[in-house]
Image (tube, rainbow, N blue to C red; front, side, top):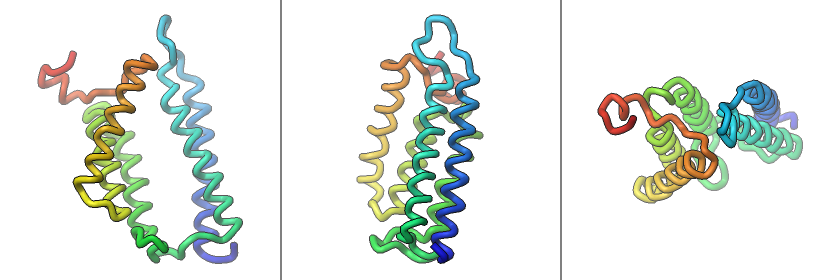
Length: 162
């Protein structure tokens, strides 16, 4: 774990664990409305928990030394670490900032499609995967769990929703 890649994974993993646990704690503070089966903090708590799990996986990967060096492609020909980290981190920040105005479905389709393109998937297969996946997530949260995800103010302004 004395390599730069191992130290990077250890640092990013520790940050993901800490950040994920903070999100879980903050989400637990959100109170639901009477009659709502899940509080609005349900989705963020799942996201925070998953971030903490990914962080734990990165820490374990660093401990066992299986990380590519900064700027190098991985064995499968994936993107350089910096580009992937920029897309993932920047995308999460953009989603957090623009979620209310643009909506869950369009933002996540763009983010997931971009991520798949970075991993070498062609555009049409990436869209064919991202669109049903995101629409399924939206359906699961909205219809099955009773936790509506933001549709986007632009749809409301156009009179298409609510």
